[in-house]
Image (cartoon, rainbow, N blue to C red; front, side):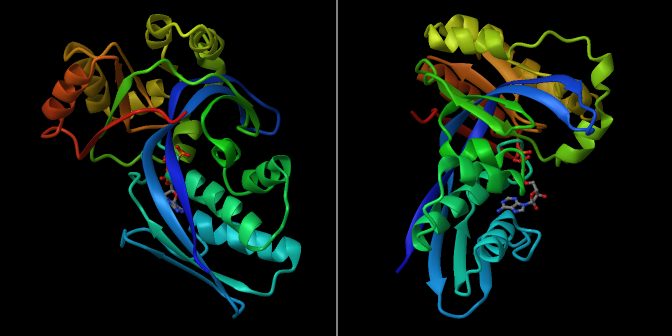
Length: 284
Ligand code: ATP
């Protein structure tokens, strides 16, 4: 029997770094939302005790460096499962882009294994397992629009965004999330957290308040290393986006508009300039 899971990308409307904790992790507050750009994962249970992962992106590792492989191994060990699993990942989400591609694949794998191996795990148990593989996995278990805090393990669903189009622009730059956080001097951040303001705007359906308070504490680090991202962000605003910010640790820059023709114009203008550009909507 085959099982298919859709694994949507996420965007950050906000990413606030509150402080660095004693355990060296950063305390975060973020507003995240799932969008209709998704990987597709096909799962086939195997009688043999092995894990096989395939993908359409040749550069992506399919061994224990792949989040999908890691989740299957973790679940097999924890629950003493002797059968195997074959997974085919049709990768549509840009990799290392700040769009949570690896995390959403891991979360989709947890959902699939829970069904295929009849594990009957609660959302809380899935979140705890997901956290072992990546800090964005807990959010991706349920997806939607959420206020996410702690290291990423506290997920509180909120209302969906007001209707809008979102342009995702990913230049040909690779950003390592670990390196960005390592370079962040949290105590020197001169920065006003915006997640609670944006949450309130979303709850009130106030699009204007939402887009004027988009914000990402990691922009300072990523823009310093890659000044062309600041130029891209400015360009998107100049072309008529209502609000622009960076997603995750970058490099994807996201812009919002309630007007489809305007979003389309920005999309067309950026296509020669950026490696990958998409127009998406958020998922309910
Ligand atoms: P985040 O926003 O959560 O920081 P990201 O979108 O910036 O994530 P990913 O696309 O998850 O980044 O890729 C980060 C790293 O994870 C890459 O170096 C990639 O090789 C590795 N990786 C492992 N498994 C996967 C997977 N299934 N899909 C994408 N990347 C994966």
